[in-house]
Structures are given as C-alpha cells and as structure tokens.
Length: 372
Image (cartoon, rainbow, N blue to C red; front, side, top):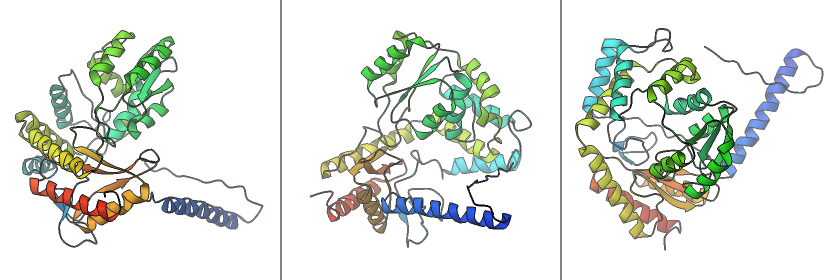
C-alpha cells in the first residue's frame, strides 16, 4: 500500500505547472530553513553506515579499522550469536522470507504462535501478542483499551512510543514527575472521577538508565482502585482492535526464528545476564571514579551527563577517532540542558574493551574541558 502526501499552498492565479513549481519551491525553502536551524543548534543527527554485522567490534564506513561499538541495544550480545543466526536461517528455509499479509488474513504461521506462547511462558502470563516493532506495540495499546471516559497517567520521561501511543487515544491524560511516587499519587487522586485509570511507565528508561519502581506503582494502583485483568482477554482485545497489529504485515520468519532462539538461550542459563551486569558495574564505577556523572544505576544503559549539546556531539565525534562508537543525544530527544552521551554495555564486551572505553572518555573529556 502506498500513501501520497499533497501540500497545499496559497498561491496567486497562475498556470497549473507554474503553481506546482512555486509550491515545491516554497516547501523547499521552509524545509531548508528548518534543517539549517537544526544544524545551527548542534542537534543534527548523522547516520553512520555500518559495513559489518553487529558485535563488540564493527566496521564503520569512512573509518579505518575495527571500532568498539558502545551504542547498540545488543545488551546480551545475541544479535550475532551463532545459534541465533542458525535458527534464523532455518526459519528462512522452512517458512520463507515473508508473509505478504497481516495476521488475521494469511499472515499467521505456526512459528508466530509458538513464539507468542514462549514469550508468555517467559513472563509467566497467559498470552502474548507480536507486533512488527516495539513502537507499534505502544502505538496500538492505548487506543484499543481506553475511551474518553478513562484516564492514562504517564511518567514524564516515558519513551516516545508510549507518548505517541497515548496521544492517539481519547482518554484524559495526566503526566507525573519522573519516578515521583508522591506526584503519581496526587494524579491518581485527581483522576478518581474517570472510569478506568491506567498507569503507563517504561520498565527501564532508555535515555536515563534508571528503573521504574514497579512495586510502588502497583501498590499505589491497588490503593486507588487498581485491579489485575487477565492477560488472555487483554491480548484477545488487542488482536481485534490494535491498528498496528491489524494493518501491518507479520514479522518475517527469520526474525521470529532468531527471537525464539534468543529466548531459549536466556531461559537455559543466567550466565549471559550475569556477564552483562558485571561489565556494567565495571564501566560505571570506573567512569564515576574518573569524575563523570553517570545517570541511573546498575543498568547497561549508562548515560554520561554533559549538559551542552555541542559538547556531547563533539566528544562523541572525538571518541570515534579513538576507535569508540558512541552517540551524543540532545534536545528534542532529551530535555534541553541535559545533553549526554549514552553508552550501552554488552555481555560480549571484554574487560579490556570496557577499560579502553573509559580511558578514551577521560582523554576526550579533558580535551573538551568536561574533566579537570
């Protein structure tokens, strides 16, 4: 399915071809001005081209030699695990490259149902539902569950997918201060007049590396009329109403096969998780000892807080010159004045990799005045 976007502009009477040309010229001018503003603010996001598979060391276009990758979501190092890759190849061979349909037409294969059942067992729940992406999962949740009679209470630093998903629904919206249980309680009291009240939070906050206090949140929910609904009916409702699920093609078999094997590896042993935790602690302790401020605690997302957008961008560029791939984040991805470099630790990093990354940060930090 293809979508066409048409821009209308107020133009004086002119031949059709000239009007179209003028509209495009006007649009180009507006877009170029906006892009120049992004560059001038130091918040331009460049895309580095990776020319190898994901792993602790990667090859980046335009940079000679191998680069240590400290900016991937590959926390457990499973993206290039040989058993995961083999499972993907097997699914590709057996089930093909794609489904060419949505789930409720002819896009559900046995491997999709098997993976959903495996995810449910992993989380000790009745059922699970697969979406093409995490963003789609949150985009499809709130609109399907909530009506104008209901309310949703959201942490102010929730992921963009949660924020956008909430925007799509017609429920009343409340935002509580980040991890502030007193403010959440006040908002719950304020929202008592609504039929249903849903609290939405990240489990781990992707830009801050801190963890939601789920026990405290559940305790507050129970105090203010909260209840637990069976996941089975919940998932069934999402299958009927969640638009990203209904109108997106199914996950390709190779992706499903890889995900299924990754879950197998996690359920078989805690060794990978323990390795990741130890390396996370090593990085955090060494960086804090060097004088850096690291947001969050005991999570492989390790934001190095710098404040200034240009500083974060320049330091990230200089880290790459020293063989370390990290990314600077600034507004609008994070609040103004809270720019940072987000470091992401993987179980497949070695202790030497961690130490080399810290040493490079110290050198670059001193070069740019972030450290004395």
